[in-house]
Length: 235
Ligand SMILES: Nc1ncnc2c1ncn2[C@@H]1O[C@H](COP(=O)(O)OP(=O)(O)OP(=O)(O)O)[C@@H](O)[C@H]1O
Image (cartoon, rainbow, N blue to C red):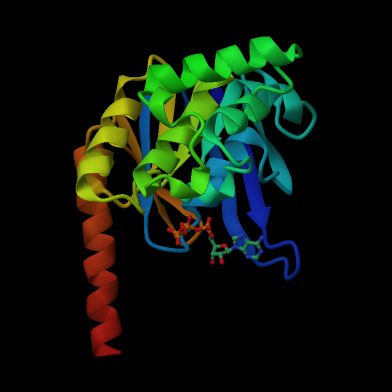
C-alpha cells in the first residue's frame, strides 16, 4: 500500500512549490496519472520510490518511509523512465540486467543466469549479447523493463514508458505492463492507456485535481486542456 500524507515538494533552488501537500492511499493494481506538461506528474511518481523526497509530509510504501527507508522502498518499487537511456548503463543487455541485480544476487554466475532468464521472459534472449546502442528504441525500453522486473519488485512505477515508442512498440510495452501481476502506476499522455486503469489521478499546476474513475478523469483532463487553450488563444 502506498500512502501519501500531506506530501509536498518544492524546487530545491527557488523554493517554488512543485507539488502542493498531497494525501492519497494507492491500493489499486492499475493506476494512471495524467496531466499537462510540467503539471507535477513525474514528481508525484518519483515520490513513490524516493527519487524525490517530500519537504513536508511523508510517503510510505507498506509502512516504509521513503525518507528513512529509501533502499528498502526501492527494492519494492521498480521505476521505469521515459527514456531507457536514463537507466541503461552497460554495453550489452545481459550485462545491464546483471548490473540491476548486483545488490540482489551476490554470486556473479547466478546473477548472469538470472539476467538471461529475465531477458528470455521478456523476449529479448536473442539480443542478450548485442550492444545496447544497436537495439531499437522499443527493444531498449523492453531491456530497461527487464532490468526492473529482474529485481522482483512488488510495484512498478512507469513514467511515460511508451511516449518515445512507435505504435507497435507502444502496444507491446503497454500490453506487457498491463499483464504484470504487480501494482503498476503509469504516468502517461496516452489517454486510451490511461482510461484502461482502475483509477486515474489528474494532476494540474502541482495539485491532484481529480482522483477516481478513469473515463471521467480523461474528460476532466480534456476540459482542462481545451479550456486553457481557449484562454491562451483569447489572451
Ligand atoms: N528539481 C527541480 N528543480 C526545479 N524545478 C523542478 C524540478 N523538478 C521539477 N521541476 C519543475 O516542476 C514542475 C513539474 O515537473 P514534473 O516533471 O513533475 O512535471 P510533469 O507533469 O511530469 O511534466 P512532463 O509531462 O513534461 O514530463 C515543472 O515546472 C518542472 O520544471
